[in-house]
Length: 389
Ligand code: 13P
Ligand code: 13P
Ligand code: MG
Ligand code: MG
Image (cartoon, rainbow, N blue to C red; front, side):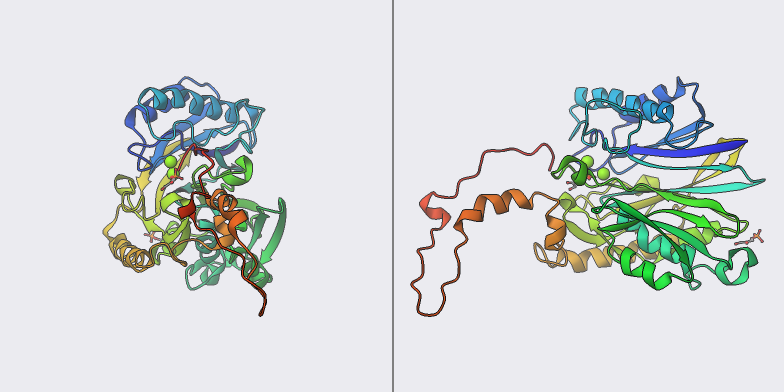
């Protein structure tokens, strides 16, 4: 019988600031999912300040029943967040009314429907202080790079390669690319992770889905900055798919991702155990955790906290080194994100405030217009306040 694995996530209030989720919020989410008869099984967890509802069920992907359950859960957990005055309570619930699917409403969603194999190992990756494009590089390595994944060379069932479905977030279009043939075309797009993100991956030999990622961009929904779109990712492993160790391996070499402080900085993605997924240095650096489960008739046997292993200490050390290198730049690029990415933060408001004061640079011989600085009292703020910063 087919099973659907869904992970629906949202930040509905941070403890303290944007660092973690208060245990009462997790407890409430657990209680609410426990009352539902729509689920085969569930696991409630968090990374940093993001709650992840990991669920198995028989309703298929995009099910209004499952999406409605997650939406109601986040709504009710927000009430707890408000009572405890958690930071940014309800941050990711951008719309009041639920209309059958959480896509476009704020929460992130990744799901896959498949026939459960005799053994079905899955890994749920969850990140905080970054964005969906953060998975592009590791997914490329897992499913297309033999230097990461020996199975691409030594497992006959992996030789046909994998199909990648890529979303153009700004253009709202998608494309399917077949690798290894289209590796270079694929890299041209996914090398720009703030614009193009991998949504799904399919095994060409098995004809099956094997990875699914969240792609929500909150700023594109809200039209303003409301926190980063901390992403989640599901990966099925073994038997013609990457081994568990191959799926984890890219994180041994931390890479730079967009996010961190105020969603506006580049920093290393640090793999860590759940216990350590409470970012505090300049609200970061960005974190990734990996929970492993074996599915058994839809039951989530687990989790195993995959990065709770001293073998990842070196990666954490490297990520700390990389964080220091970036921090040295303070408000300068490449630590601060580039201008086109800053468009999706609070920068447009600053630009709007100063727009009238930018004067053309005079041509040679032309008199310069008087430039008026803020000292004369011309440049006052517009008084608007931000919901979340
Ligand atoms: P075992 O021999 O421990 O089962 O491991 C097999 C394997 O494929 C590890 O990646
Ligand atoms: P989150 O996106 O995790 O809420 O973080 C927002 C932020 O401003 C961190 O400094
Ligand atoms: Mg937050
Ligand atoms: Mg977060």
